[in-house]
Every structure is written in structure tokens, then in C-alpha cells.
Image (tube, rainbow, N blue to C red; front, side):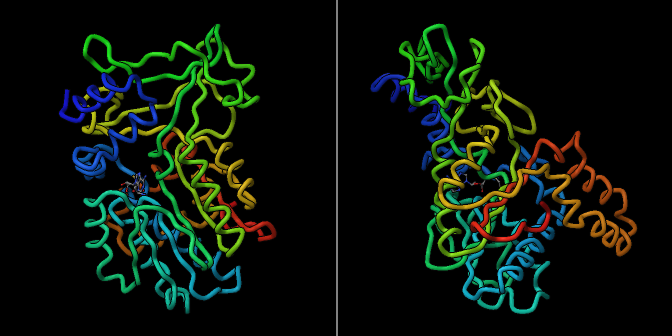
Length: 356
Ligand code: SAH
């Protein structure tokens, strides 16, 4: 076991089993040995690759989306452009470059990067040092008195989930326990209170899962409140589901391969598929209206990624194959085009944003 694994085992020995959510939080964010504190997860040599790291076109499309929404809202002044979990800063760098020539957009906008990892903050600082933008870092999303544009790509999947499993005695929470001195997963002996499980899960078969991310829904509601009171929009892109399912989606990834979530805590990324229905409900509760979710492929195509790929290929014919393959990866249904979804949060009476 890793030193972090030993500490988690000692915690469980002292206080009893912990929820999957608490385990994810410790593994991802422990201040000494958490995955995001000690790793740069991205790239070919890293653990996984994300859309902005595949191609500059992704960030460019999102930059254009932001500029269009800003313009459709009457070009408000003092807007905050917030990115949740900016990774290496690639998306923001590409987005800012793409909107440089949109008159007025960047003049008095403030960029806010919500990032918990000191390591990734450094990468972001480096990547954005010549962007000319005013940038503030924070480790928690906070609403100030300003219109908001919020972007979150592959952020919500990193937020901790709790898992419940349907059994003959009711829905029991899946816990991380100690078995023969090792970390293991087991169901809580007593069922969870009835009120914790939504009625939409009533038809679950025995062994079916219900996953919920209280951190994700609380944050989504907070963003919705900000947008409803101050105007703007949010765009969430992630892998996830748009209906009711009974499977489990907790996953651990290292070096581009799936591993077991309890293996070597702190060495692998942990995440879960995003429940877009739950996020949409939370956002509506916060006073926002929803566009989508729509498949990422469709969203990017509507924003004109095809034309952008053609233009880039024309400017650089030697990279034609690379460009075609990046476009395919981002949009094809069997690649990222369908598993990934795009959803927007808007003030109640706002018109539909581009891409939806
Ligand atoms: N958006 C980037 C990175 C996705 S990985 C991309 O598409 O490439 C998830 C990002 O969220 C990382 O930057 C990670 O450090 C950050 N993160 C994860 N949990 C967080 C939390 N609770 N608070 C703030 N940032 C978090």
C-alpha cells in the first residue's frame, strides 16, 4: 500500500468505514500525497488525455462560444470568465487567442481559474503568462457581483460520489472498509434512510447502483444562482449519462489504462460519470434554465469545428492527417462525440446559446 493508503487504513481503523466520496476526496486532494497534488495527469506520458490537449480547436470553439454569448447578452462590462479545473491551462490559452480580435470582449473581463492543485496552477500560470489577460486564481468557485461565464470541461467527473446498492433489505451505501488489513469495498449493514434515494430509482433491480455527487449538485446550484442573479451562462462538458441507469461508474485510470479504484491510493486518477439529469435539476432549483445536454460531437459541429479544421489544414497541409484524426477523436460517436455531453445553464429568459 502507498503511504496515503496506510493513512486511510489507519483512519478507517480508528473511525470505521468511510464513504466512497470521502475516499475519493482523500485520494485526489490529500495535501501531501493526493493525486492532483502530486501529478500532472495529462498527455501521452500522463494518465489520460482531455479534449483541449487533443487539439487547439476545442478551446477555440469554446472561446468563440463565450464571445457569442457575451455579445448576445448585450456585451456586459466587468464580466467574469470562470474556468473550473483548468488542467494545464490549454483550453483557456486557446480560447483567449481565438477571441483576441473580438472587439471589446477581453477589455474589462476578469479571468478566474478555480484550481485546487498547486502543481497545475503553475502550469496554468506558465501557459497563460503571455495572454495579456487579467487572471485570478481561487480554490473554490465564488460568486461576485458580476455577470458570469463559467466553463467546466472534465471537471464535474472529478467531484466525489456516494454509491448506494439496492439489496433485499433496501438501499445500502457502499463503503471503503478494512478487510484483513487491506482496503476493500463493502455494503453498509443497515439501509440508507428512504428519503435519500430519489423515487426515480424505485424500479432498480437488486444489485443496481444509485450514484450521487452532493458536491457536484451543490456547485451546480450555486453557479445557477449566480447566473440567475447576475446574468451570463455556464457550459459544462463531460462524460456522463442523460437518463436513469443502474450501473456503477466509479473508475480509476493510470497510464491510459483502467485500474482498480482501491489500488495504490494517490497514484491513479479517480472519477465517475456525470449525472446530467441531477445537474440539470440542481441548476433549475438554483433558478437557471437548461439547454441540452447534447452530444459533444453535435455541439462542436454546430459551432463550426469542421470549417475550422479545414482552415487549419489549408494553412498547414503537412498536418492534414493529424488534424483529421483530432477532429475524429473529438466528434465521432464511437470516440468522444457521444459519451461526452454539453449542457448550458442560462438566466430564465435568455435565448438558446450557440451549439444547442
Ligand atoms: N479542464 C481540464 C482538466 C480536467 S482534469 C482539461 O479539460 O484538460 C480536472 C481538473 O480539475 C484539474 O485541473 C484538477 O486539478 C481540478 N480539480 C479537481 N477537483 C477540484 C476541486 N475540488 N476544486 C478545484 N479544482 C479541482
